[in-house]
Length: 350
Image (cartoon, rainbow, N blue to C red; front, top):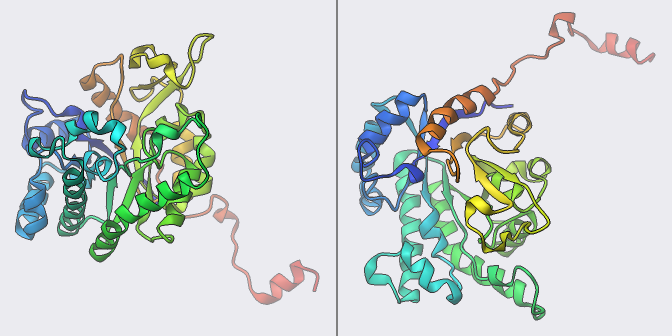
């Protein structure tokens, strides 16, 4: 068993134009003062990291790592959620996902895809330079618009979709392998990797590539009504990154999992600040510790009710209170267990 590391915080939701949220120094000081021990860095935020420079320069990465360490923090992972999303975008979503791309790539899906692939590769090299062995991202999606099979899906469509997705990711995964870094896909609605079955499909399509792993976030399973505890039993060997985010699901006679196109505050399934939702984190932390999952507990704050700063303050303590110090001895060791073969034989009546 291993003790989960933390608490840590994903900085993506806290970037702002006002201090202290507008710089890496400001965010590091803020996070450290709240009791966080790690930060997950979104690589699309130039105010936090120059990803291209990090891929080119080990010296730059050493300086970045040193700056973070000066505040008593560690970098848990780099994140390419936005760039990973752009590795695979169905044309129906081109206009909306152009928001994730630089201005000069908008209205140019092919060039946008190639840029995204290189960005994620750059994150692999940067992670290696920073001494990190895990990376957080999205898979992107070519099939999400067919999630509800109406009209009927033609035979072979799903298989072709996962083959194409794997073909796009395999060169990236191979580069991550060269860098000694695992790719942790956040299993998330809107992605082609959104549950256990789709993760298995992708794993098979990549020929069980050893760098294909999971960023586990139970909040996305609550909204799907998937058993997030049993998920750990099935996939614990792949869980190498962990977002601690709460959620709730309160269906009515008018709305359920699909939400009626409502805004977040009006949906049956919605994300909540830590401790305000329905997720059984006590069991989750126990399971991950039992299985020896070597992960950082990274708070991802998303809530349609509570203020972000209050959520961050409460989140650090919430995670600290749930981290289990893995035992190094059995509780019944006091009874003594020194034995020899002859004693064992006598116990067995041999």
